[in-house]
Image 1 (cartoon, helix red, strand yellow):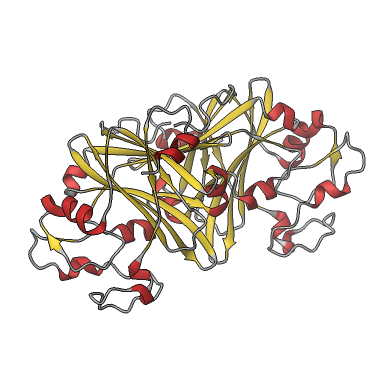
Image 2: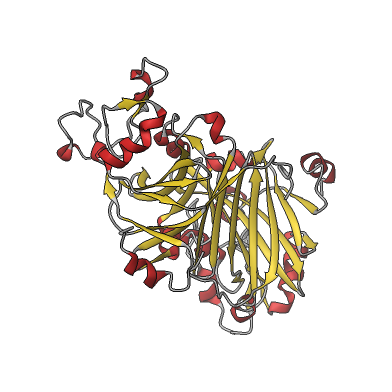
Length: 224
Length: 224
């Protein structure tokens, strides 16, 4: 972690700041593809094919959105697989700041971190992607490394705050058994146009405040 | 106002709900254009030409985003012009709910209301527009009917809350002396993709909670 940079950006912050460097998705970059990758996806988001190849319902495919990884295993060992094979950092704490660097890099790019909180592990994915050609957007979502039933017990909040503007997104996390690609292509997440991302960025880095809580019954649903 | 419909949607709400019907922008619809409209804008957002034709700096052009209106006058009479000529409703109260109907209508469409609060009048504009062809998006912003210096004293909040998702946008309102078209084309406002707008809609209507406060010094800027 580049704490020196985080400290400069968050001089008055008391929260844990995690600097997250971007990773170009190998699965979108055929020239860098590992030999293990058999598919011929070429810059287009692949369909969510992982689920189709899982025959043992107790086995979970590698859901790391960075790679077309042939690994599969039980839910309990997904975290150690992501840490060890994909070098994804894991942070502790109810509220953290995710500082994504090098926002100017061309799409597709992912920024990924795991977040350990309330006895569970979550995966935060920020993705820069061109849903409309020539118009990259940023998509941020949080997945629980657990079942959909477990995911329903939580609420996550992503918050941007800079330049006298504030944007907050609150939702129930999806389970990692669902596909992060489809969550993003459905747009059911925090979505930022490039211009907004620039307004919220500082020196090419975007700070996202993250908080996870156990969800209450949404009694205020439909009110304001 | 169709309060019966608002009550059905917000059965438990204590706040004032204003049902806002859409208005197709005359300036985007040449076949319906008034004779007074000399420009030949054809479905493309026009440049913000109003400012160019104002010679007397004390006179404000009609900033109603619906029409290419030849009117100009002093800031003090903009509200009565918008009410009388453009039939824009005005609501009182610090917190109101803006209920935009018929979200399915094709772009470009505007939903507009004035909001009287803290001794000033504000204009709320929700616009459906195809920034990228074939992909309509919704843009919502609030303008102060006053000067930029006056606008800096306020903060407005737009909030969507439905289906276990919540999205909040907070910013300083722009002055109506600036151009609503450029605020929207810059994307410096609440932006919703169609899929998110559907998640937040109920029966084709989108409820936006609006609150205006006097702005404090942003001491928490850059923190979270």
